[in-house]
Amino acid sequence: MPPSGKKMIVAGNWKMHTDAQSAAALAEQVAGRSAQEAGQVQVVLAPPFPFLAEAVRRARAADQENGRQCVIIAAQNCHEEEQGAYTGEVGVPMLRSIGVGACIVGHSERRQYYAETDAAVGRKVERLLQHGLMPIYCCGEGREDREAGRHREVVALQLRTALGAIPGHGLAKVVVAYEPVWAIGTGLTATPAQAQEMHAFIRAELRALAGEAATHIPILYGGSCKPDNAAGIFACPDINGGLIGGASLAAEPFMELVRMARHAQSPA
Ligand code: PGA
Image 1 (spheres, helix red, strand yellow):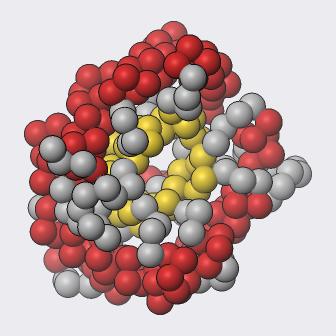
Image 2 (cartoon, helix red, strand yellow):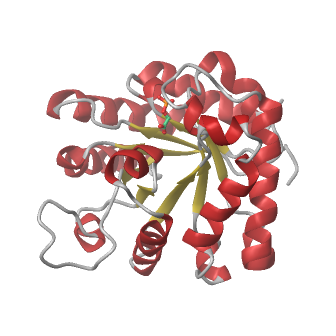
């Protein structure tokens, strides 16, 4: 994929942060500013569940004011089943019914603290696709795997287990986020060379799974991505933007990352 004109997505993962007031205000600010500043970059915001509906309302208001879709509101997780006796869980049809357009699945914090497996994450991806929501599928190796040189095989196994059964036309609608676990929230970032190498590897794996349909799957980098390190990362040919945790909790620096993605899309 050529570095110029590539698809770019900047997604903010708010994790278990914000409250009703700050979430609504942040969604409104980012949506309003994205209309002016994002260009062709797709901006995605993933607030906690209780604030999704209000974030959708603020995003829609910005859409109306600007005559275009400014941001997509995403959930941070979903249940794999349609509905049922799963106390405390949230189903994809519920998310769709309030206007949520995307969902992060398989985040390493879900894998680590809630024992999510790739098989279950794959079923979540299928459920999201069935209802027309954009899955943002997270993968990435831990520190020990990286140090032992096993990062490629770990990520290949994650991709094959979670996405292997999904037909090519479905896979083409998935967004993949490569998030080396050792870089999440640690202040450590993969170098652009490390990230590009893994993104090219992931792209090849996706192509092996789904053929040419996989060629244009956006692959985001995540893990301590901030304005002071994003330029080199976003410029890499196989990197289509970022999944941003800490730096997404204020309109700046998040919008600066959006502007940097825009620059990487069409460097002038
Ligand atoms: P971070 O989080 O940017 O705070 O490292 C990224 C993520 O977990 O998606």
